[in-house]
Length: 323
Image 1: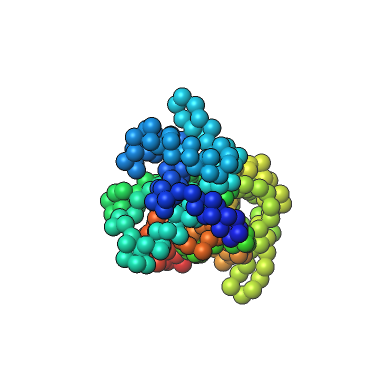
Image 2 (image 1 turned 90 degrees about the horizontal axis):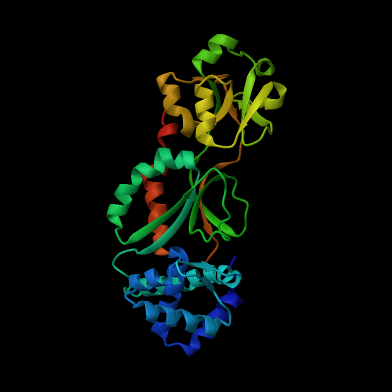
């Protein structure tokens, strides 16, 4: 969570600026960090390159540290700049929220929204929605980092993240997008070759694929029976850390795998994949969460994108409609 005393300290340091100078200079710094270019950030605020450079120099003098490393082509954040950036975003968010409360907010959401999400989910469910969202918010710039690797929200200066996880980090807040149901499945070709298991004990005689790690996963039936999907109990010679590749290998007949229903429900409907031990589901506390850094003020750009995803995806997730 942001340190309130430190936030007030930064606010007090700006007392040497006029009020407009204070907030516009912070916006310039945030934009320069997002764009890796002070001149480009200045143009977005209607400033000449020389004025933008002067504003940044005055901010750094006020802070007492170099916030940006400059080169002839781009800038990068210094250690102090990385530390200061989330506080600058908070101060801007507070001002925007206060102005909005007085009816003085901007007519359109603008700025850069940094968002990270698992690549497979983003390809299936988020990327197709982006044209509609951008049409509604033409002044907003989306900076997306799509990877099955999880980025640190604070260190990466992300505004929002989609995570398949249990919400435990006290420095983050979140809203649940949807449940994450995981099922065992395999290709028809593999089941024809190796046979379909009828009990969980039969899994030890099969090729089993693991996603990310070979950690055993608990399975449960509706009657309360508990079992286990343990890749090492079978013939596990394939561990994949990319969701799409994991699904492609399963479709190609590599073996039996545990998949999120959102990833494979279309293949199950078409018959390209078949449920294995369909009476069992994975027992997990994970869900699909939209997470954002802990702050007293949720910025308008984060709120509109989060509300959009909740409305378009979370109301009635298509992968859960027939379960």
